[in-house]
Figure 1 (cartoon, rainbow, N blue to C red):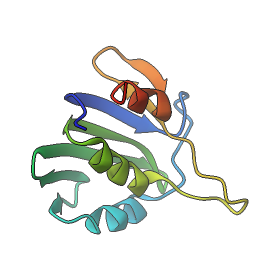
Figure 2 (figure 1 turned 90 degrees about the vertical axis):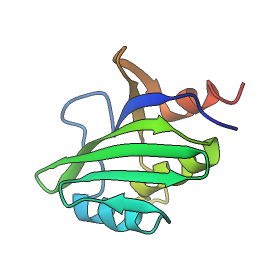
Figure 3 (figure 1 turned 120 degrees about the vertical axis):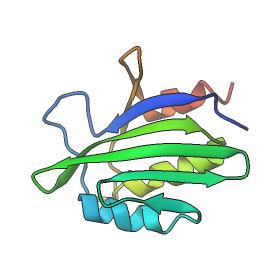
Figure 4 (figure 1 turned 60 degrees about the vertical axis):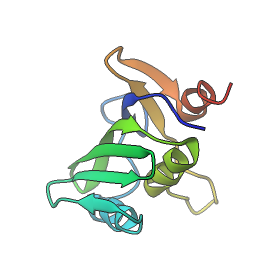
Length: 120
C-alpha cells in the first residue's frame, strides 16, 4: 500500500524542548543500514527504491536529534522501516514516542494516527 505524497516533521513531542533519544551519529548509522540510501554529512539524505523516494534532513543540537524532516512518497512498509531508524527502547523496554507534524498545515498527529489515515 502506497502512502500519498507527504511532507512531515518527526519529533519526540510537541514542545520545542522535546528531543529525540538518539544522537545525529546514531541516526546516521541506522539510516546507513537501509539499502539505496544516500546520506550527506550535513544530515540530508535520500532513500529511493522501486516506486518510492523519500528525502530527509536531520536536525540536531546539544548532542541529540531534535527533529527529522521527511518529504516524499513510499509504501507503508518502507515508511515503517524508515521510522524504526529513529525509535529507541529505554531500560524498561518501552519504545520512544514519535509525533508527526504534517506540513504545510502544521497539524500535530500521533504516529499511529498519521499511519492509519493511509490504511483505511
